[in-house]
Image 1: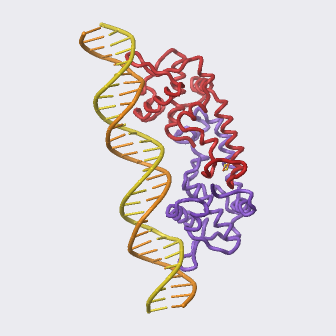
Image 2: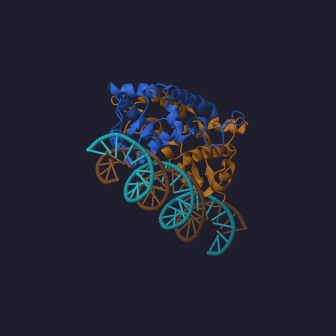
Image 3: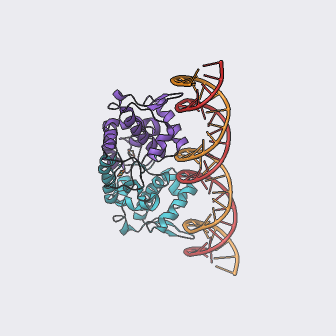
Length: 144
Length: 144
DNA sequence: TTTATTTCGGATATTTTTATCCTATTTATT
DNA sequence: AATAAATAGGATAAAAATATCCGAAATAAA
Ligand code: FES
Ligand code: FES
């Protein structure tokens, strides 16, 4: 469904958000440990999230990654997915035609469209904040 | 969503089914042309479909690939997807946890589960026959 | 100003997916 | 029996995704 990079990006964002609630910055090392991902690769993904203004980075001693508290409710999953995987997951054709086109549909178009639209709706309406809160309260988990 | 191999496999199966209705066998060359895919790679995927008893192959002169007419209604998309991509697309965790587990859900579990279940239902209930008929009647297309 | 810490970013390595090529094998026809 | 036409399948090759490494740049503290 999502690339590994995107999976790591989502989980990392959630972990950073949780810590930012408490005013703490986190390092790629802590993040990778907490989400069970390869550290250097995770660091690369963080760079992409910084470039897309989803995550903020602070260089130097006492630095690390953080997310503006006031932004976690506005940051939706689709911002992260778009930053890393692009929009093909919910705009592209399910069978790989050059584009998904109502007027020239592939064999699965009708059946896929509704599912893809639901996925799109979900990604556009799920905030980092709610995901982070569920982790904090032990309702969901980032690894294992 | 699906791998390229799976996309080619689905489209190839549809094209073979259409020709089988008319008692014609088709070659990897014809298939690749019709679904706009790399020929040798498509041939490899056909081998997998043959091994999974979805497609029948006949070697030698006047041979080619065919699908038993009486089976096209019973062959569902999920048979093809399972044969090529496995079942991770609708059984695996959306964020890459080792397994999707209600008792130990990832942050997106609840929101994903319903979408994935719908995808699963669709794949299990869409037959090769209906997809082939829609192509035949010009309602949908295999390429461009 | 020096030092320690930390992200940035380029280079490289590994693995997986996608794709190609060539020979062996099978089979219908002549 | 010989020939031509097909698929089967192993060996590579190329491209993309995943992963690692290391020096440069920035920053806070001593
Ligand atoms: S054309 Fe294939 S999903 Fe719309
Ligand atoms: S645990 Fe992740 S989707 Fe179910």
